[in-house]
Length: 129
Picture (cartoon, rainbow, N blue to C red):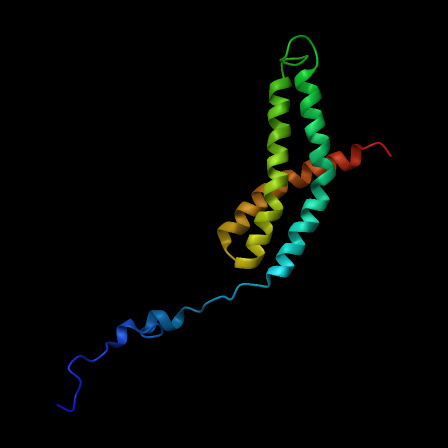
């Protein structure tokens, strides 16, 4: 009885097999840079978010009744809220995508950052000096 009764199988080891050895693990990046990226993003979007909040409030409460002064008031408020949500989500998604290097996170971050950047540039260009 010099041999063990049950021998461990090689298939349960993490690096056994051709498929497991060819897959390399990607280490996550430093979280400090991701947090710094999120803070810069929120700093960039702070003024446009405040402007959009005031535009949505004044547009929804202006004119006759509570529906706004014209037919497109509700849609304009919807666009303001969508812009605000993109500005809130995009810095956090960019930080997650930078940290974890996942393609789906990059796609989500770009899809929220593109409209947010367009709206922010439009607001910064049209702000009175």
